[in-house]
Structures are given as structure tokens and as C-alpha cells.
Length: 416
Image (cartoon, rainbow, N blue to C red; front, side):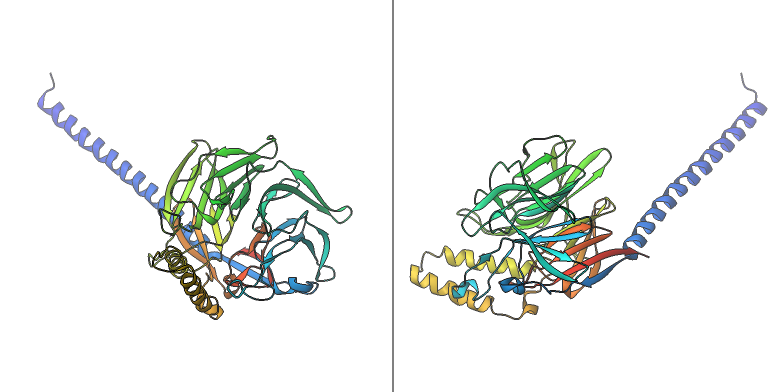
């Protein structure tokens, strides 16, 4: 039995112990909270401290219709040697005026010593709308489109000043792809979306260039198909995470066009897709990444360059979709209405189309968007991006529908 005096001492000690524990817990909670706040502030400061250094390359050495610029070219940056191949443009009239889209087969090298472009070879056939992916010991140029058909072909690209350019056959895709996206992390290569065998697609293919002899079909990404999307991959917690952003669905017999507004993430370990964020700016406005391109920063951030204006683009393709399906129109009336619409849409000044001048930055940890930088020169669609943080290039692309730019920009991300 505990007497009164012992009970008083016991209660006093119990209160002291409880207070001590509470003080300890409070300190621990405050410490954890301070770490969380400090980490958040540090990451915010890190984002705010990243700046862009931009240098325009000369267009000297571009010949013939290549002087007008191309979009959807292949490219590679190998040991500081920038290669650009293929691409397409409208060198004469715009498409609605009867102009023909021309595809190119030239492979160009930017000669830094002479400060000009020079032709060093040719593609097996004139093509564009494929993807260019960095791999150990070279690049892959994958798929694409010619003037008549889509491609499943893949080539390993290597270059040295001593041996020059080498294109080696690489295992072909399971089916032809164009207007899709590609990315790599280590020896893993992924491609997704675009048109597969001529139809808008949700398909995802994968190959490990170190071990695999053929491409594998991963689970399709959810939602509508996405043409001209953006793809990025990071490695986290012993997993490879694949991100699909942007793109559009042009509509079919049962569904009207849509824009890819959700950021989707695929866990290679779990073999599952998740919706992780919306593409929205600080004002909660949806933006588009259709026709954009991307670079992964610090195995965490996805920096997205260019892309079309969300509302203008979806309104336009929806209008054209309904014109094409208006059963009250005769074929001739439909043709004329389509021509009148395109004659107005395609002939506006560049500023009218409001391509993204912002470099949107997605934090894969916090699932938040910010703007890394804003530059008029980023406002293009169908550009090609190759390189690393130390040196990367934004190559040509569209300034507005049907009009290309011959300019290529060298970029570097600086941290203050």
C-alpha cells in the first residue's frame, strides 16, 4: 500500500515526467516542423535562384529551303558536337493555300570552329516527327514520318571528329509512331503517345539498351490519347518514374477533341499509372504543353519549353472538328467553310497565337508548378531539345502554324 506522503511524491513525479515528456515532444515537433519549413524554403529559394543563360547560334551554312527553318527535326549532342537532321516545313505556300509540306534528309553539324552549319550526311529517307533520345555512347533517332508514311525505324547515332557520323540500325519499334514523345534515364528508353499506325495513341513502349534486344509494351497511360505530348523520366526510391504531360486528342466519331491537362506518372516498379497534378499556373489557369519539349533538372524538376496556347488551340481544333461533321453542309460547302476558317486562322501575326513564352517548371516532389524563366524565344512549337544541364539546345520549330524559325538557341541553367 502507498501512504499519503508517497502518493503525493508519486503524483508530483508523474506530473514532472509528463511535463518533461510533453516538453520533449514539443521540441521534437517544432524541430521537425522547422526542418519541413526550412526544406520547403530551401527548395523554393533553389527554384527562384535558377536562371537561364541563352545564346543564339548563327544560321550561316543553312542552305536552300533549310534557311526557312524546320520543325520536328531529329538532333543529338555528342561530345559537344551538335547534330540536327531531317525536319519539315512549308517552303512556298501554306497548307490551306495548296502548299506542300516538304521533308528533309540532310544531317547537319554545327561547326563551332567555323561558326556555321555544314552538311555531313543524309538520313535513309527524308523524315520528321520522330524523337531523339540520349543513351550511353550516343543517341537514338526513333520513328517519325515521311511525306507518305509513318516509321518504325530506329537508328543509333554516333559521332567523332576522327571517324565522323555513324548511323547503325537499332531494333525497330513494334509499330510505326509519329508525333509522339521520348525520353531516357540511364540505359532505359521510353516512348509514348502520338500516332501509332496512324491512330492517336495511349501506347507506351520501353527498351533497356544495355540488356534488351526488342521493345516492350508497357501499360497504356489513362485518359484520352495524346498527340505531341511531353515525356520525362526520373529515378527515385529505387524506382523509375515516367511522366506524361501535354498533348491533345483530335477527336473521333464518338468524342470531340480534348487537351491533355493532367500530369500522369507511371511507376516502373509498381507498373501503375497515377494522376499527380493539373497543368495550371499560379492563377489556376490551365496551360498547354502540346508541341512543347522538356529537360529534367536535378532528377527532380521537369522544365518545359514552348507549346501552343491552350484555349486558342482547343477552340480551333474543335471548330474544325464540328465543320467536318456538320451533316447540313454539302461537300463543297464544307470545303469552302473550312477554307474560309483556315484562311483567317493561319494568316494572323505571330503574337496572335500566344505560344508559351514561359518555361514552366514542374516539381515532381511537391507536385507544384512554377515559372523558371520567360523569354519570347521560347514561344515555339515542334522544337527539338537535346543536351544536359551543362549545355542544351532548343532547335528551330514553329513560330506560328505553318511558319518555322531557322534559329537554334544554346541554353544553360545557372544557380545563384
